[in-house]
Structures are given as structure tokens and as C-alpha cells.
Image 1: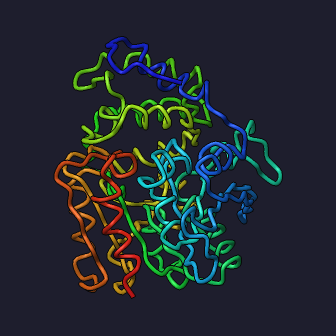
Image 2: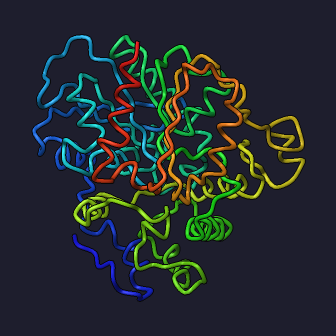
Image 3: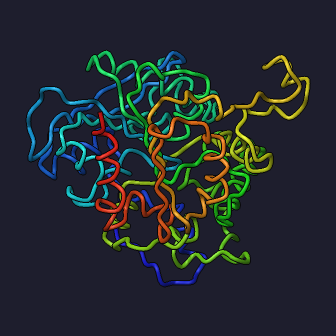
Length: 387
């Protein structure tokens, strides 16, 4: 499916959000079939059940196309961000996509999919049509999904994992999963959100909040309710819908239109509207905290205190190896928010923290840029391979 990027009509945003998945292959095994095996790689489908009953789809690339040895392959779990799935890591050609690069360099690559995405809509007792199915935020992704995938991969491989993202930060800050983690990488890391400079991103969050209070449990990018709420977004000041990726994540430097076509063919994925409410709370408060229930009595009932407990990034163990790469033009992972994160990591062991700053990168360059394999992935590989 090809999308036009030059029209200044409101229809561009609606096409993006309402119909982006119309031509997508949404079968549960579509990632293996359409994006991995077609490139000449072996791909396995795995199912992981969380303690709260969600059945997650996980893809595995056990060997490379050019390196098919199976011995001594360290496992790495790549986890996607919001409104997408594991296709995130497979959008470019094999020599430019992180998942394939890692497989060809001797890693056992596992691709996680959050609950609610097309690969992970199963549940032991609930249907995705049940409102209760969508009663979660990123907290449950960190406390339920991530440990379940970690445990499964650790059991399958018997080795510590390489990993990254906000979910890892919050888990590490509570000293969870640390013993099963060899190192972690964060590309365009989203942790603190108080300085979020993406006007489009803030508008999406606000729209999702409205959907939540209207009683819509699932944020469906192609859904009619969400579409109606978003109809006026493109006419708002400072929002240019001629290029949706730029409007959302900043002016990308080096993404080919054909790569954007692949992105649109395999996204966008559902999440819970409650998840956006939680993110909105983080934007307003400028901190990383548990979900706030709106009044002191509700918070006391859940947490034993009137306000949601905070996650302290200063409590991340100082000896866990971390690779953090961020860009000046990223409006989702704003430079000021990343610098706040780095300030919290100032006492981290110096030889365990690698920080890369890319002056001309925006958010989506880290996964889709034509030169990401040289600019980001080569240093990342060197970091992973450091004894």
C-alpha cells in the first residue's frame, strides 16, 4: 500500500490512522512469513503466557542468513514502542535492519510483541472485545509481559539476555530482571516525558484521554471513534500533517519512502486508552510514576499512599552495562528529557555507560534511517561484544 505524503488535506491524517492497516497482512504469523522468511532467514513463532493471562506472540530468528552456526549465540530481546509491533526491527533491507544485523553477527534474536498487538491478542479467559482485556498501562507491560518473555527466553536458552526500552528502566530501578540481563540498549529512549516537544504527540495523548473518558477501552488507530476525535488535528497550529512521521517524532534525516511504505503496511497496532492516560500523567508531572487513580482514596486503596509511587532511575544498579543513543531533532524523546535521565545516571560506573548523541537524528531515524547501520548499529554491536 502506497500513501501520499504531499497532500495538505485532513484526509492524510485519517488515512494514516484509520486505514493504514487496511492493506496489511494481519495474520498472527505475518511477521515471520512476510518480513523474515522472505529475506532468507529462519523464523520461529513462540507463545508466552503472562501471569495475568495474556498470550504473547514472540518471533525468533535463531540463526543468520550468512552465519548459520547455532552454538554459543547470546539471546537478545528487541522490544517495540507504542502503536507498532516487532515489524519495527525488520523494515529495511537485511544489511540495514537491526534484527537481521544481529542475527548475521551471531546473536539469537527474539522479537517481542506487547499485549494488544496483532500477534499478542490472546488471553486465557478474556476476549479482546471485553473492556477488562484493556485494563492496563505500560506498567503491566513492565511487570507482567517483560518478565514472562524474559523467563521464557532464559528457559529456552539458559543464558542472560541483551535488552532495552522504558520497560527495562522501570524494571531495573526495582532491581528486577537484573540477574538475567547481560546489557541493555536504549535507542531514542523514552523515559521522562515532561519536556515532550512533539505537538502531534501531545495531541494524540490528549485525544486518547478523551476516548478513555468516553468509555473506549481500546485505542484502535483505524477505529471510527478515535478517527472522529482526530479529525481536527491537522488544522491545529504547529501541526503539519504533510509528513506524519516528522509531525510525530521530528524531522527525520534519512528515511526512504519505500521504508515508510513497509511501516504503513504492517502498522499501526492497538494499545489501551488507559495507557495514554498514564503517559499523559507523566507528561504533566514530569516524573515516572505508577498509574494515578484520580483521587487520594483510590490511590490509597491501590498503593497505601495518596499519590502514585515514583520509579527512581537513580536506583538502577550502577554496574549494569547501558548503551543510550539519542538525537537532537527527536521530539518524542526530547533532548531535555534524556538529559534528565542521564543526570539520574551520573553515578553509573563510567565503563558501564555508553552515551551517543546524534545531532541530525529524529525519533524514527533510529529504526528506519538508511545510515542507521553505520551510525548507530555498528557502535551498538561493539558495545554488545565488549567482554
